[in-house]
Length: 283
Ligand code: MN
Image 1 (cartoon, rainbow, N blue to C red):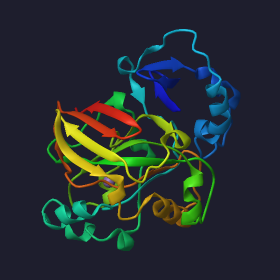
Image 2 (cartoon, rainbow, N blue to C red; image 1 turned 90 degrees about the vertical axis):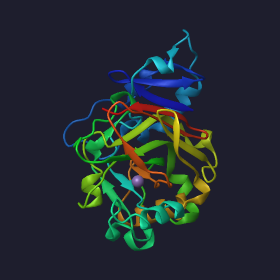
Image 3 (cartoon, rainbow, N blue to C red; image 1 turned 120 degrees about the vertical axis):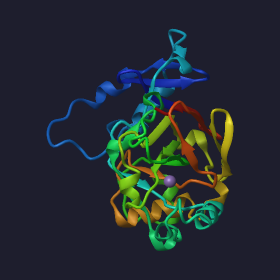
Image 4 (cartoon, helix red, strand yellow; image 1 turned 90 degrees about the horizontal axis):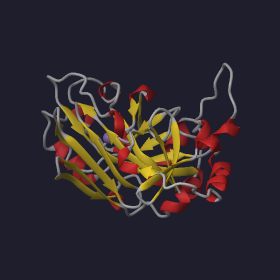
């Protein structure tokens, strides 16, 4: 099942290349008063919503998916947890270029651990990416994004897949420079999530997915999730050992080699097997 958010705040069920408005399924979630929960309401109720959606009978043709403005499929992620250098070849390219990648940032993930990005950096593909400082270099990083489905902590690797609601594509946009990693990766719009959430049962095995990122049609990044240094269960286990994970929390699993600069006017096209294609623009 593929669930998207689009236009102002519509919930869509994606079937083939068309999207059907299924906003009625979130009505039961009700309204909430202060203080608001820390999790994402739709993801927290995804199991019930999926039962409704499985019965959904489309009464119209829907609209072409490429005609709508897609938002982040997770509206209110409580945390964006991200893996630093987590592909061997990206480690090698970073280590070979200390001007672009300061050496104190190029350490093994086992030494560095994970880092957090501001949730205010999250946008959908339809928003595009506005470079915060046009005189500084902003780079693309394509990543498999894991969306947590239930509250959990200290999850053993052997049980990690059971806490995952689904997956989407993530762009971990990065301002180059000497500052702290999370500071440079958290400007508004520097976390693009989309094009939709693919539920874990639909995607199946995420441990060997091809991914590519193109800029203006030219391939910049091409890799497979089998080359992750810390695989998905290990990342979930590590993150949950440090933080209680909540429905809608996102784990960006790290980018492969080939990161590079984007400039105003560029079109980014990222694809991951079993998920789809995320297209966005740079301003
Ligand atoms: Mn990254």
